[in-house]
Length: 350
Figure 1 (cartoon, one colour):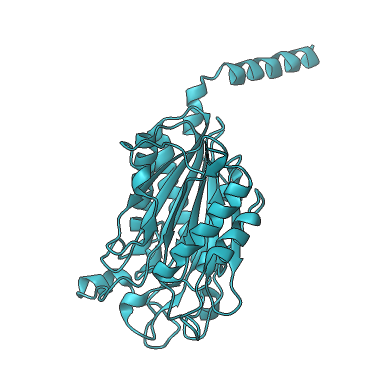
Figure 2 (cartoon, helix red, strand yellow; figure 1 turned 180 degrees about the vertical axis):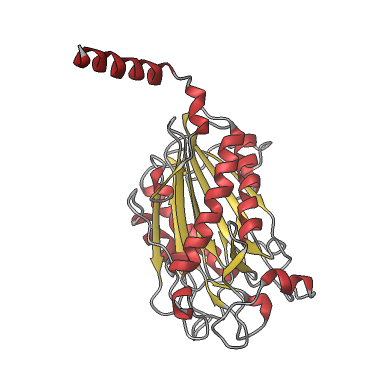
């Protein structure tokens, strides 16, 4: 009799679980996964140059991926971004490339174009293929001994050829090899930035992944505690200045753009270009929460948004998850970065 009651109890519980409305999955906290490649079909490839700390990072998309971009910084270096506006003709995108080398690094895009054309990816036209490749660069020319070493078409091609759906290398790699942070505190007070990625998955199958390259003029704070984890170093070279206190004293970035944090949000949600743009816009909240200050005239802060269209999802859910994942990815980028002479990593301060 007791065994029979137990079977009925288990069966009843299973029936209740099955009967739960699909929407109730929204109340379940998202789980943290490996990174942006958790989104099916998204591939990442990186190349780090060995002659100077710089390189490029390429994100390849599956067919029919919708793309958008939101540029907030005052000194952006971008390519093929106007086409991603909701009112323009093309709605899909084949790749995004991030590169060091300042404006010279935009040449790395040519290599990605060449690689994708060889794979017959892009718009077919007269026997040729025209890939849609957008990108952005960051300023890292002062890092290392030779500012004439910059990512070029070979870098872009090799990074694209290396792209996989596997785990993404983080820290001082690819476009983040020469990335630095905390420069608004003046010379000798900065630290090392880099590449970071993470993803969030809900129980109903929605996945939102983010990859960032953190090269900010500001400091990095943990939004959960409000405490700095990297950025402007104090006079002792080991402790960190409070960036909020610096801002309130009137300390601010100055000079031409020499920074820039770049990000790409990828989701398996089905979104229009306008909705993808909204996700990119909301993801910038992650920049503002974690980088102090952010979106200055000395930064070219840019976030791309990619929607692969595999599941139905509310754009609001996608956007708020994108902001959270962006903050997490920024923290990973600086915590995993390896220091360079004059630019210690987080581990070097401990």
